[in-house]
Image (tube, rainbow, N blue to C red):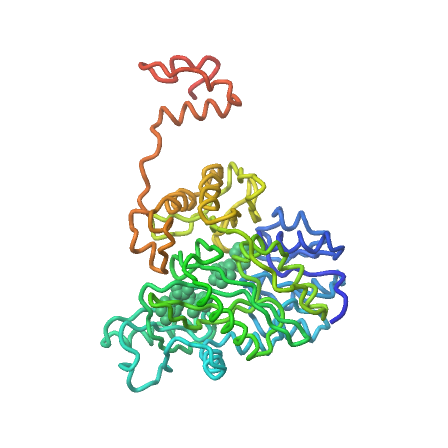
Amino acid sequence: MGVIRKVLIANRGEIAVRIMQTLQPMGIGTVAVYSDADRDAPHVALAAEAFHLEGVSAADTYLRVDRLLEAARRFGADAVHPGYGFLSENAAFARACRDAGLTFIGPAPEVIELLGDKVRSKEIMRAAGVPVVPSLPSDAVNFDTLGYPLLVKAAAGGGGKGMRRVDDPRHLADALAAASREAEKAFGNGQVFVEKYIEHPRHIEFQIFGDDQGRVIDLHERECSIQRRHQKVVEETPSPALTPGLRARMAEAAVKAGQAVRYTNAGTVEFIVDADGSFYFLEVNTRLQVEHPITEWVLAEDLVRAQIRVAQGEPLPFDNPTPRGHALECRIYAEEPARSFLPSTGTVQCYRPPQAPWVRVDTGIEKGSDIGVHYDPMIAKLSVWGPDRSVALERMRWALDQYVVLGVSHNIPFLRRLMDEPDFIAGRLHTQFIDTHPDLLKTPPGPDDDTLLVAALAFSTGGAARAVEVPSAGGPFEWAGGWRNT
Ligand code: ADP
Ligand code: ADP
Ligand code: MG
């Protein structure tokens, strides 16, 4: 611990860029790391210094603890920011940083370890008086007390992976075995357990922050009920579902959860909330969250800056900030919603994000970037602020309409349809929303070929062809002047 002068950012893409945007104005040095595939990535260009991790796969590069520590040593970094994903919730990495004399910007390794185990963390929270989803170990004799449907989950799970819903007792044994094999492969830990499956819940989480002085506070909620494959796609704050009373009870439970493990730095306590307003603890994510920008919008605070200050041993820099207005975030992914959200790959040929004072785009790509199979297919996080939810929605619609990404398939049209869906507008959200609104996945027919040709012509002439009228016969071939059809 002590004053942080140079930080190694053990991550890539938009989150590495985001972290540097806070460090650099603070006068803190930045060291990026990059794989063979990321040589020309924006996060490398922005960093003052950069270290090459030979290889392409995550396992060969961003997950190599030894190489990351070597990078820190080589460039004289005194702290490490793990971002999210990759090694951000890996207790062994946090411990290795500490052993190497580096400040790990996050909670203590012991706390990461404890909370990374969904079975142990639930025991601790139950004992602390936090409401927890009813669950049983995988070797329980009788699961009937939970009632079907059940959800089989990996103790070490994350990112929505390793979950299986079971509707019929006859399928439970197979589901347990399959989930265990999957978990062993994905997380190197085959332990699974069984939870009561809550139908049509909302996902509502609380941002918490703790310091070395023992103070733990909450920084209000985020609702992340719009999900695909148990992973968030759209987030907002405040939640349209919370009454002041329920919000106060949940915030109190979140702080209690943090206090139970003497939590330090930024964390997120996740709950699911059922139709009658009962809420249940799911897990604590021991890192900065993908959706942290919406909390930053309504609080006008910089959570990464607070992370740095707390990691230096300073007390929490917040004094019960009051949220203002409404913020919405959409995750822009290279994927095809109509094909089960299958990730897509390719080179970004044209990239034009929206710009306005109430729009924020966190991105790690640019024109010419390749979106490959090796890393997360997220292109950007698009967030907007408005004085209330309906203005925030208007602005999000506009921002999605302005957003141009060509060269890879993406989910912008899907998100745009979502913003017009009456149940979404009314705030009637739940985690199976996309399944219960299948029309959102239908792609309306695109423009016909003539229209595309005219658009291409207008684009290539810088708009000079805009006023040209399309003659009825012959199409653009008849009148295109200097334009040749090759
Ligand atoms: P959260 O729990 O923060 O809401 P997720 O459950 O989607 O979000 O978990 C974080 C995910 O972010 C990881 O599973 C990983 O796939 C993805 N990820 C990790 N690093 C990056 C990055 N640099 N850019 C984009 N996505 C990333
Ligand atoms: P992960 O570590 O993968 O993020 P979580 O336990 O946080 O796993 O759950 C992720 C998502 O899965 C939740 O937001 C919710 O949509 C769904 N989910 C998890 N547990 C349950 C449950 N018991 N009943 C219904 N849905 C659940
Ligand atoms: Mg979770």
